[in-house]
Image (cartoon, rainbow, N blue to C red; front, side, top):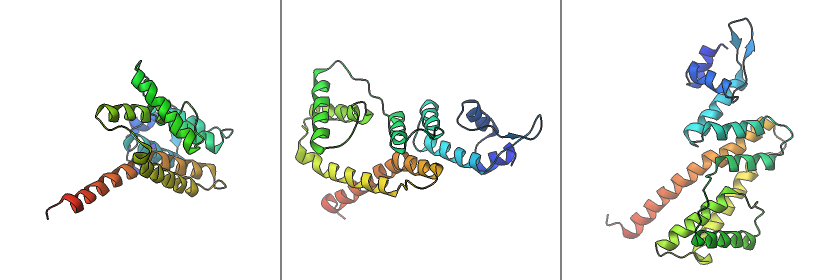
Length: 209
């Protein structure tokens, strides 16, 4: 297909497609003349993936570039690809010079060890959780393992479900899409369902109608 058809089918402008090509997010088309290139289904699938990462995942181009580079490197294992995706997504929270934050980070590290989770020290989620712990304590809600247990159980169950859906023997492109869908898009699903469930629980417990 020509770039105009690729634009129609992807819902993206020709200018946006050319931008993604320049940024290395999308491979160039096959040149059929000095002024025309042909694009295939792989281009359309890549554009749909990029759109999902940008629009739903709200990822910047730089993060998507890191993910795409890992996707195209067959030497990157699935676990390393998953890590690249996680760390590119972030969020990258700057560690403040705050003893409260350092104490919270130590609590997070202790929690990960206690749970026996195999997570690197540089995982962005460690810092994110530490910042959240600090905010909760400042609001008068100190963290206890009892408070965390329901969230740990839910997170473990969801993670096992997501990773279990990834078929290691499937074509790499399909496997990559499964990883990205679980990491970026289904996280939004989980957030939305959590909020809906909260509203339902509140209505049943505190509602008057």
